Picture 1 (cartoon, protein in one colour):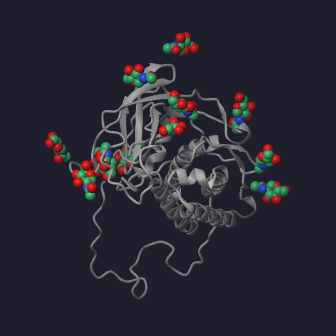
Picture 2 (picture 1 turned 60 degrees about the vertical axis):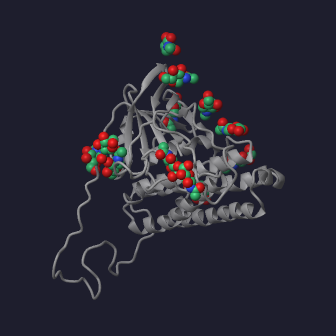
Picture 3 (picture 1 turned 180 degrees about the horizontal axis):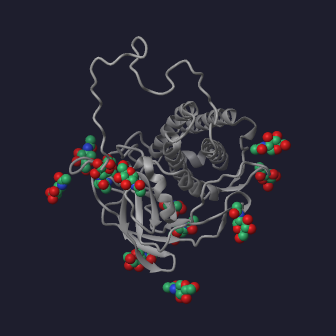
Length: 351
Ligand SMILES: *[C@@H]1O[C@H](CO)[C@@H](O)[C@H](O)[C@H]1NC(C)=O
Ligand SMILES: *[C@@H]1O[C@H](CO)[C@@H](O)[C@H](O)[C@H]1NC(C)=O
Ligand SMILES: *[C@@H]1O[C@H](CO)[C@@H](O)[C@H](O)[C@H]1NC(C)=O
Ligand SMILES: *[C@@H]1O[C@H](CO)[C@@H](O)[C@H](O)[C@H]1NC(C)=O
Ligand SMILES: *[C@@H]1O[C@H](CO)[C@@H](O)[C@H](O)[C@H]1NC(C)=O
Ligand SMILES: *[C@@H]1O[C@H](CO)[C@@H](O)[C@H](O)[C@H]1NC(C)=O
Ligand SMILES: *[C@@H]1O[C@H](CO)[C@@H](O)[C@H](O)[C@H]1NC(C)=O
Ligand SMILES: *[C@@H]1O[C@H](CO)[C@@H](O)[C@H](O)[C@H]1NC(C)=O
Ligand SMILES: *[C@@H]1O[C@H](CO)[C@@H](O)[C@H](O)[C@H]1NC(C)=O
Ligand SMILES: *[C@@H]1O[C@H](CO)[C@@H](O)[C@H](O)[C@H]1NC(C)=O
Ligand SMILES: *[C@@H]1O[C@H](CO)[C@@H](O)[C@H](O)[C@H]1NC(C)=O
Ligand SMILES: *[C@@H]1O[C@H](CO)[C@@H](O)[C@H](O)[C@H]1NC(C)=O
């Protein structure tokens, strides 16, 4: 359980300046530095930039791939298409912002491949991709050396959070079935992103993050034909419930992935034993039942975020991984899980 310290109540503490309590960081006249201040910052911002570029390409690609009739048939009209176009414009802004912070060392736009052939599957893919972009940035923002750069990135990622919610609404899903948005590590984000990048300009930034072996939930709920688009729907059914069996298959390490196959998947974990569910504030583990080589099953857990009659912990678009251990981790030390990842994450459509 997270132990949150109560606010310190100090009496008669001197103010740093009029109406300015002492403490805090970056609140004096030192000029903010909107640049990476460490290799960690550089690699994190570069990962963010790779993410913004694929979103920019993806939104345009979907608009170009399907006709107006296709969109209309999926319940998305001209105004909805304009909103997707506007989101693409937002991505131009976000990519510009990060490129400016990285200056000469900013990566460039790549080529991509996408796993959808219908408007509904396009929207579902956008909903999942924006979620892992969002969760990936939440995972590293507060760990950056440059708090100034983190502030700018925060102002772009909150926009992306709104995009994710709109894509859920375009699917007719409940817009935000969670009390908290989960964070993941950079290596988890890069694992999810890299398979869709086919090629990049020759000297593009090579990311240092790990690519874990791919994980597939072979019976992931398919929500694309459930509901018409709606601002909100009273989900009178659950897309999945505690007790549901998940069947999983995963790759062995050593596969080439990412642009031009320039990255190799790897793991430092031992035998697969658990399934980690990263959802909201919680990383919850369930036992993995091995079915065969690189395949197994587990059962969706229950649990409510702050105990009975609060809200289901496992809900929304979440992250599932196969691990060799079940260390207790909380949002700020999730990185400690990386060394235990056998495969994944995969995105589970739980609500
Ligand atoms: C989820 O995390 C919160 C915050 O750490 C904790 O209070 C709660 O007990 C956890 N809930 C479950 C079901 O694990
Ligand atoms: C997930 O959230 C939705 C929307 O609030 C709710 O209808 C559903 O019952 C929740 N799922 C679970 C497993 O509790
Ligand atoms: C993208 O693909 C096109 C067509 O194959 C190729 O001409 C171009 O060089 C590629 N661009 C990048 C950045 O890899
Ligand atoms: C790649 O090379 C070109 C041409 O030399 C240069 O303009 C660009 O800044 C380089 N990009 C990176 C990411 O180093
Ligand atoms: C995941 O499993 C499903 C069901 O077997 C399959 O249709 C799909 O192609 C698999 N996805 C990947 C990326 O291998
Ligand atoms: C989901 O179901 C629809 C048909 O209802 C199908 O066209 C689509 O390919 C399925 N999506 C996935 C990812 O399996
Ligand atoms: C929403 O669904 C729940 C569960 O089926 C039901 O109890 C409730 O009356 C519904 N509310 C509305 C406004 O339709
Ligand atoms: C899914 O997992 C269950 C429980 O382990 C198993 O009985 C079933 O055969 C699995 N299904 C597939 C398609 O592998
Ligand atoms: C990936 O593995 C191949 C050999 O299988 C090796 O030649 C290559 O250098 C590796 N690439 C990286 C980025 O580690
Ligand atoms: C697992 O792999 C080993 C070695 O490749 C092979 O001998 C064995 O038959 C496989 N088992 C299953 C259940 O596929
Ligand atoms: C939650 O409810 C169950 C069943 O009523 C009860 O056994 C359990 O003690 C409750 N847990 C908490 C944390 O209140
Ligand atoms: C992560 O932080 C929690 C406190 O929030 C601590 O109890 C736990 O031991 C830490 N996990 C690891 C693996 O260090």
